[in-house]
Length: 192
Image (cartoon, rainbow, N blue to C red; front, side, top):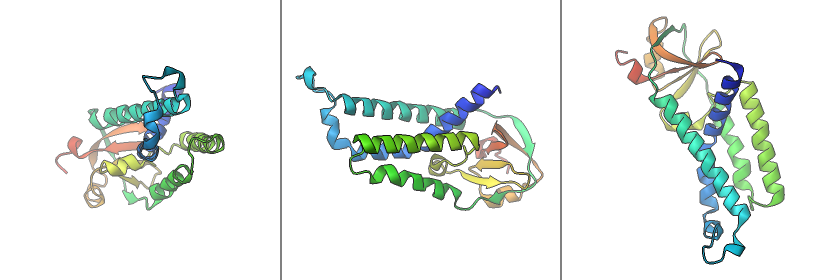
């Protein structure tokens, strides 16, 4: 996989990791949606709110598309893992970044928008450079957990820790997502 495609995949996974936030922000601002476009009065279109909702909808569509691709793709590669260790509360710590935008009283005020976009971009750079695609609350919502191995690989799986631990050093069907990050799904490994 060339470097451009790797970075693009990491960016899509970053966008996906914030999908629950996009929905929360839309719900918090639902009272303003009626002001987006007033078909009777085109001169008073709320450009700021229209742009805001359009960007959120694009981000949501990217999130849904990326999640659909990963969850529905068929994988045939066989891998052996020497351990499956629980990762603890790292994803919960990542979720704390959701609080800043939600606490913004007026999310669309210039100052709050600048702070939130800057924070979002800073986290995006760290997420991409540090290969943190396994920090994704959407994985948890879809029933997946994250595990680490003793050689530094990360495993994203909807198979329980107990079952995975019973299959140490056995061949499992998995997908190599990127940079020592693997996806192991129940449907690809029905016999374990």
